[in-house]
Amino acid sequence: MSVLDRFRMDGHVALITGGNRGLGKSMAEALAEAGASVVVTSRSAEDAAAVAEQLTVQYGRACWGYACDVTKPSDIQALVASVIAEFGKINVLINNAGINIRGPIEALSLEEYREVQDTNVTGVWLLCREVAPHMKARRYGRVINVGSMLSVIAMPDRTLYATSKGAVLQLTRALALEWAPWNITVNAMLPGPFGTDINRPLLEDPEQYQAFVSQIPLGRWGELEEIGGLALFLASDASSFVTGAGIAIDGGWTAR
Image (cartoon, rainbow, N blue to C red):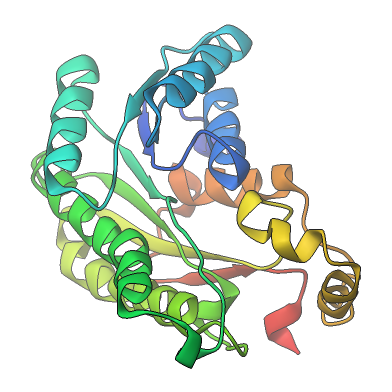
């Protein structure tokens, strides 16, 4: 098999949470272009279906959109059961759904803390648990958890998000060891500043925007489509000997 063939995703089924916009949508486009059938989720069934239809038309793949709240175990069980019923398998799971609430710790509520952890950590754990029997039975899987550069560094006013993304990286490492005997790889992508909705407050504040740019060795924010190459690598057989890794895609920020 040639090196380029190892990046092909023909016959694979990829499930991407939060795949209706931002980085999730860009990853869905990359995998569909490489040949995968892609299932995207959103809390809105309408939004998920619209993206799936776009992917089907643009890339000629059978793609589906489902509503799913990753904080609800019943939603996750129904989602995985529906994908298995429709496609017969899940080869790739990308845990991308996430939220961010910023502020000094004394201004944050326990409810806000739990909301961020439930979405960013518990949702990832629940989805991994739900796909485990299916991937183990096939002795194959690619799991990609979307962490953050805040999985490994910190910033003020980010206690909720940094706590959650640090947990995602450790969850990734533990699962990589646990699932290695079944040929299931588990890796984390650690994005830096991208122009996503979650970062809109920073994008719309010129002072904060420039403060971020000054910390990025490449001197700019990431473009959404730049996430696709790393997602495809980790989802494909090109990364067959990579597991337990946290790979920064941050313009060099965490190398400083």
